[in-house]
Length: 362
Image 1 (cartoon, rainbow, N blue to C red):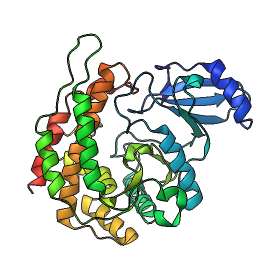
Image 2 (image 1 turned 180 degrees about the horizontal axis):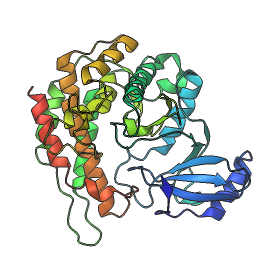
Image 3 (image 1 turned 60 degrees about the vertical axis):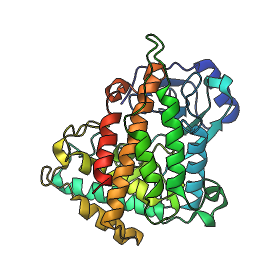
Image 4 (image 1 turned 90 degrees about the horizontal axis):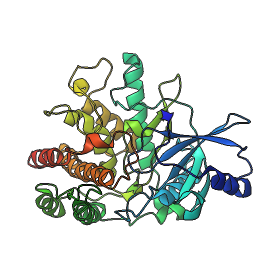
């Protein structure tokens, strides 16, 4: 999944930095860029001497639209803290964080490369029905393991967020981000990205109607394509892309992981990541039902999610994803999009908010 470089990196400058600060990485290196990664450009570093592989994650080039996005510093710090707080949680080892923009043009960190399988399609094509069921169970059980970590018991994790009021803060943050992204103009045409229809009304609704407050360490964007599975075994060996991690409501992660089930029921089921009707009941052999996944989570986490809570989480998740899609559109307009597939997201925001209203009224 690594290939041509779309955002160049000054190799000489990076090499000098690594020689001074990370002697365990054998030089020289070759660099390729991963095709995935909507937010932060992500690169594969390979030692020409040893063949060892590493991953570099950096902020996009140029002036950024949002101060709350692209937080590679946050990713590094939460990965380091989690590796110390939970030995059984599959997170990659991190080597360094460089906040000096003059090295590669923006802040970056380096972590270990996990040699496994990454599936862009959450239906997990190419595996047996038996493996598919076990892999989905591994995904939700791994999430439950994360949610059982108590941040108050670890100083480094405790500083990642406030112990209550997560969804209220989310409403305020998403409102601010959506407004800023809407004003973004295409660098060639000068046309604004524009506001998402009915988004402000949706945020007013979510600010006044919320599920019972809960608090734990959350990933922030937990989904199948942010997981690394073992090369041959049906189990998760790594969780990637932690820039949105915080102290928050666990419902956010659960609804994000389960969103393909809901989108498959709607017209235009390819919203956000290209999945098909594979998540319709009995459409894919071995794929567990949505309720089965929720039950597994409840057994492992000790929290049985009420249907009303799940519907609310689904609705809010659709609105949140509408802002993510709008952000990809805005970065594409500024020629800052890091994914090779950024253009496919441009028209999805209105449809996602429409789905949010549907589930909010359920």
